[in-house]
Image 1 (cartoon, helix red, strand yellow):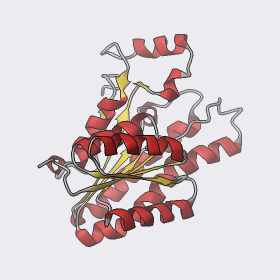
Image 2: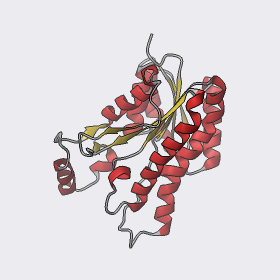
Image 3: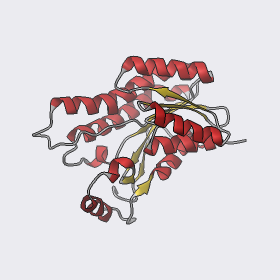
Length: 248
């Protein structure tokens, strides 16, 4: 029997990058996967990959900045699979600019997607988790929420806030056998980072003791562990997956 057999995972931002890798990995481990993102066509490609491997998956078009879409998609996923056991809050955006030039709209958009969205998703899945007295909530934060990054005041603030949200909710839910943890990726090769200049990518790589960027699969392995029965006594924790970039 696979470790997550019989479990249902709801993953935001599942159409590409880290979200896609998490969906594929959780499905390999036996979970049925509800795939949520704005791009339905890309979601359906991920769904097809999972189904081709004899997994279970369904796609739900959803913008995490829209509360009503979150409620509708979570309800549809519950109707489709009967429950939700695991929530992976992965969806995120960037709107980079120096703080003195940053537009209020870009601040608001990043906070709405990266922090308010996860808060709303947690609220939406809590009722079934509380009833079954079992749940795993995993928030994808960032090393830049721990150390900051020039030109990313909005992004770093949203990811730092997500760490605070993780710890606060972990304290609230620990007695109900619901764990709440975060994974903090460092420099990861994704479509988001590939658009950066070669000079910037090279400079960032030099700051990594392991000498290379991480992969989305390595983040997915960390998420899968925190979703598993083996992680049952871990809550309120930030799991750093950064090749040694942030050592304290």
